[in-house]
Amino acid sequence: MHELRHVTSINDLTVDEIETIFSVAGDYLRNLRDPNLPHRIGRSVTDASGAILATLFYEPSTRTRLSFETAMIRLGGKSISSADPATSSAAKGESLADTVRVASNYADMLVIRHPRDGAAKLASCYASVPVVNAGDGAHEHPTQTLCDLFTLRQEGKNLKHMNVAISGDLKGSRTIHSFVYALARFGANIMLMPAKGMEMPEHVHWRLRNELNCFAVPRARYEKDNASVDALYMTADRPHQLSLISDAEIKPRKNIDAMYVTRFQKERWAGKPQEYPTIDQRFLKDKKFSRTSLLHPLPRVGELDIALDTDRRAAYFRQAAYGVPIRMALISMLLGFAREKRLQKFAGGFMPEKYEVYVGSEPGVLACVNENCIVHDAMEGKYAPQRFQLVAPHRLRCFYCESDIAEFVVANRKTRHFSIDAEMPRNERDVVFFASPETAMAAGYSAAKRRRKAANA
Ligand code: NCD
Image 1 (cartoon, rainbow, N blue to C red):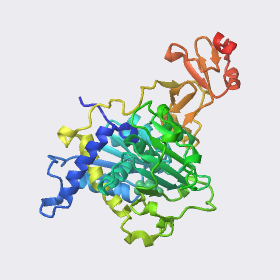
Image 2 (image 1 turned 60 degrees about the horizontal axis):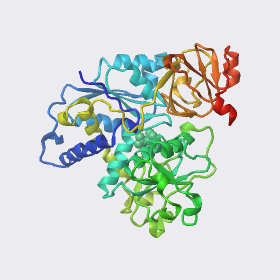
Image 3 (image 1 turned 180 degrees about the vertical axis):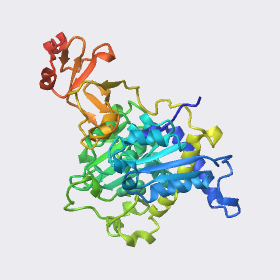
Image 4 (image 1 turned 45 degrees about the vertical axis):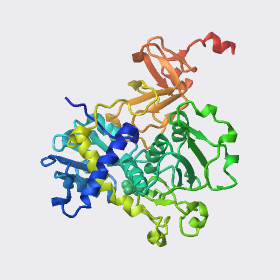
């Protein structure tokens, strides 16, 4: 039987698979534009009739939901939708886990948007059909990234070595998190221009540097030309090459190939920003922006001047339009309509190594540090046992929202000892994590003797 594939993160897809999605989407786009074709659907679709897509949206949406539904209809299938939690059983207190278990019997694929980080991952644990993340809290929005990269390709950009500037709410924007991972994997350079106090989360930085072969250029090397850039990442061609690059060789090109603008994510913040960057003609008058493609996932609410709409650099409405062929490609590949292009068994994506997943079952053990993680939802959390991946000796990653925890102690259920050196018990089942030595001791664990090497150091 074909193994179930979910897309909860852009990192669930390999670069080759993303390239195939672009090629299938390119075919659909040509067909959508061909007025001679009946129904304007792709010739390569053999039979999508009878297939049903369910969109389960717990947060507002226009483009994402409508383009997913349009995509399925264009493919010859049908779509059903629960677009307002106030009118679904969520209002009666039904959990996401139960909803997806039920909806798996109605539809062939579930597309989920939710205000909590990690909700799509939780849903994928309970669904028996493919789950696609259409935006979960501030975590990720992988299909938006597919549209973003596809747009850049259509605008004639070569993703490799391209300079991409990203402005706005880099903390609250899930679109940005998926986007930077993909840019790094395609070899682009990334310039971060956050609004004050809305810098990209530390764990996303860590991932760029430690898993995605990105090199953080020292500030002194770019600050003179780009005072508003908070961090500049260059991507090396090959793993491990970074250490070989001398400072003198780091010469980021000045031209900006793409500028990605995002709105203030007001639903994820308590207050209002005092200042927020606005992109307009004046901002873009510098020569380095002369060939820049302007992107925005939309909706915009003032941070992107409407006077730019007629500017040849504005690509954001085309970007929204590509949502249909891109999602047609993803649906047909997930469901196997594009037969020879079906997404195969998940081969581990891009991850440099396969991380072990540790499941916490004891009460009082370590909890995800992200307060908006699905595990902290009073109802949904009951369906989400604490799960972590050990991604480095002193770094745990939440299985659901992928936030990292750098401070914790590892304890051994069998010996009842804990170690602050993050020494892992040999048997996975014996592993238990605590937030601090104090919480471990409160749970009846005692400090293990330190390793001789560490003690002598
Ligand atoms: C984005 C989202 O929902 O994260 N919108 C979209 O899907 N096109 C961006 C946003 O809401 O700002």
